[in-house]
Image 1 (tube, chains in turn red, cyan):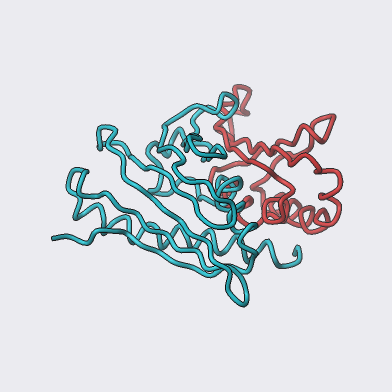
Image 2: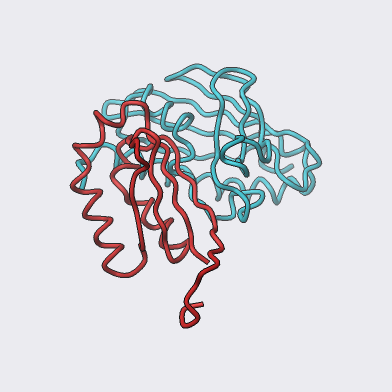
Length: 93
Length: 155
């Protein structure tokens, strides 16, 4: 099981995000380095938001709780969904 | 007689308008998932308050459709001053209680006071009021934390 975190941005995301991007990026790197965050990125049009793949719900919630994008009004809404992936390597199933 | 209301109060470093917006439009940003303060924590993905009197207060189970458990309806909508919502929960058979939140400017921010009444109408109201009193104090702590972080620079 993986946990998908979806961000829906505010309308003026392109104006608001740059000021908080360095701190947001540092948080991404931190969670990736410790193995909790597997993948992350915006959709082709960043105004449509982004998606991240976490290894646990707790890690996803912890990420949100201190993410500058959430704290500083870049994100309008967020949602975590369980994702039951099929093609899991046997060793990590 | 039991206590008539569950109450909580915080002072947040924001203007009354911003404090009101954080409590309404942005409630889903800071209301913590996976805590006891959901009717169905497994299915809940968001919490939303539709603006204006009559707006729905919904524990969202389907993010795209915006549907889920209706916690209540907006009964007072005075941005920067006062918010009123009704409140029910599973196990109350749809009986509604009343939550009123007031926003009052102070020298360094906004005093936010919450009063939750109507527990005489629900099953085991005396116990419920005590639980909600503790609960609202924890929840307003999350809210105050969000207001504080919003004011600080990114790090």
